[in-house]
View 1 (cartoon, chains in turn cyan, orange):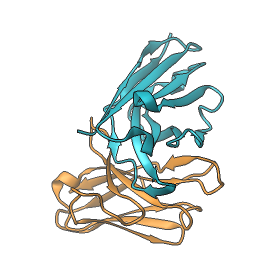
View 2 (tube, chains in turn blue, purple; view 1 turned 135 degrees about the horizontal axis):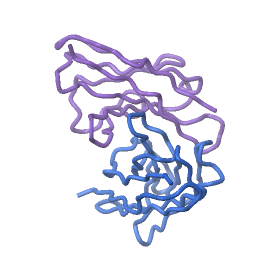
View 3 (cartoon, one colour; view 1 turned 90 degrees about the vertical axis):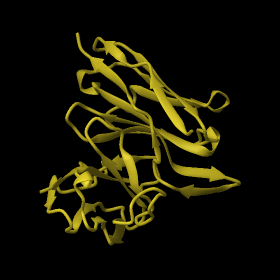
View 4 (spheres, chains in turn cyan, orange; view 1 turned 45 degrees about the horizontal axis):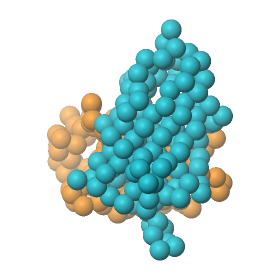
Length: 126
Length: 109
């Protein structure tokens, strides 16, 4: 079964740090880009950060650039998000998502973010 | 920064056709994706590469593209289709940057 399981969320004070993890199983992890998407309470989806299959392409939303760092360990089938200098507006449910691009044999194909975890909640409050 | 624009809400009666639009300057150059999200659940991909339907998604869901606008069409809407729908695409600036539209609440009357 293809599965993504996020962990590491919790209650943290403004200005502090938190590291999220996403454990992947059931697919060839190092063939796929991976992303973090968040959803503040009652709000829409917000793309946070993404990383290509080989970490050659990395991007961040303007709202987190310079504070968050995405990384992956293909040997451990894991995705990470290091969040520093947290703010109240970072409070959200953070999802890990597989895709949208799949790269193999030198070619890339686009299938969308077809697998999502159930999310981990981050609350930034004093 | 790049933005995708969706109408906040769309309402239709059961059996009718719902159309949800998404506008963005880079859409002629970048694929669009559509996600359905029901309360308390993770998003589900319903359309990829503008008009392709993943396996397991009912045929009543379809996508199309014209210039800077993409459209999700749900034919013969059912009560279970009531949900929030989000479009997604990439920035065409060459940076690895993705964006979601603001979301559209589909209400089945």
